[in-house]
Image (tube, rainbow, N blue to C red):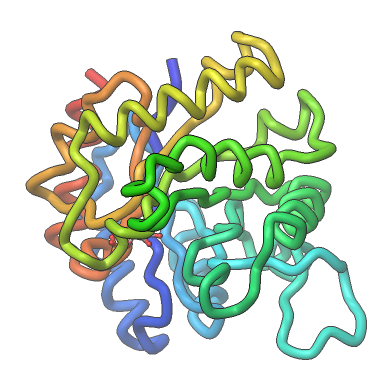
Length: 255
Ligand code: 13P
């Protein structure tokens, strides 16, 4: 059985004060959650403060990115070591916004993943196709390229510490989520591909999250699909009510 993971990607939102208020409220509301793992990914400025509040709670800390070197002359970057030091368990890697606006490539994503794993930080690796790619029938091809590129050189031990997130670019922030059937089809495809690379036992253990306009209305159907093991939530993770409702949907789906 895979433990569902609901992770909130706050993107470039929330001051430290706003972050603390949000996470305090979520923390109280999810005290009874037992079967679902929860994580939040605040912006770098709020990571330390949010992490302090989350100590001894059932919410884990994630960064939104991570660099591949431990230290040195890399202005503006943050190392895996710096993140684990302040209690990060996860790092989102290769988000489509990073690829689109900041020049991330499969190669740089692969380096970030390797560095994170080596430091005990679990990457949440984002892959997904654009609308043009889907409409031209290339969705699965893109998924293959992204996944193989991300996992290049990663062995059986490495993959066990990786979470995959399928985030169709056309569904991110658009209010147009993939239907449960569309998402399940890609999740199944990803699981088969991981099975081809690492064997069926590893593939059955690998968690594959869905991300893209997930909200409290569509979460129950998406999360009840056999190969959808949780969600990477953007907009709906910024509000206590919608984020906790999605967490409860995961709890119920895992019964
Ligand atoms: P939205 O939930 O706002 O569509 O964002 C999804 C996402 O990009 C999570 O990483």
